Image (cartoon, helix red, strand yellow):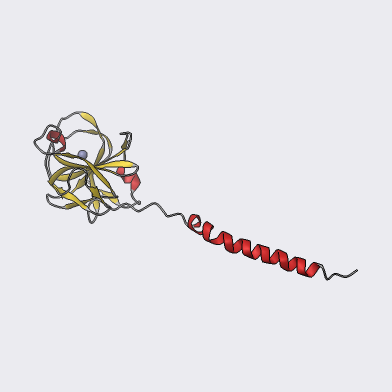
Length: 180
Ligand SMILES: [Zn+2]
């Protein structure tokens, strides 16, 4: 008996495997590296100082307990407010208008999985329906609407309208609480 017939057979298997691996590589490459979730851009430059947290609070203007569906961030009038992520401007409230009575000048941006709102602005620099990218300037902070002083009210809701605490969307340490 001669072992010779085995040699060409093994070469044949090796060649088949080699061809198979080469053919599989290009199609498997794109799914092997899923893109990470994009990092959100803080809406204001510098430290984000929370002057009123998300949740129930004694309202400074109405003098009643009410739910605060956003975060109040310290900001003097005129600080640039930028989009934390890309989206479409789906609503603009105007100070003095019906909805702007409380919100003041306000910009709402619908992102893929949530809606951002920026209230009490001094200026609005985007238009209804405009597509914005993360970091684009939306307007400037102010004291329009029902406020006791200038600040940025940052509000986030799910696409279904459920309020979300914005602090949970950014890395730990992004927000600091002003000590009384
Ligand atoms: Zn607020």
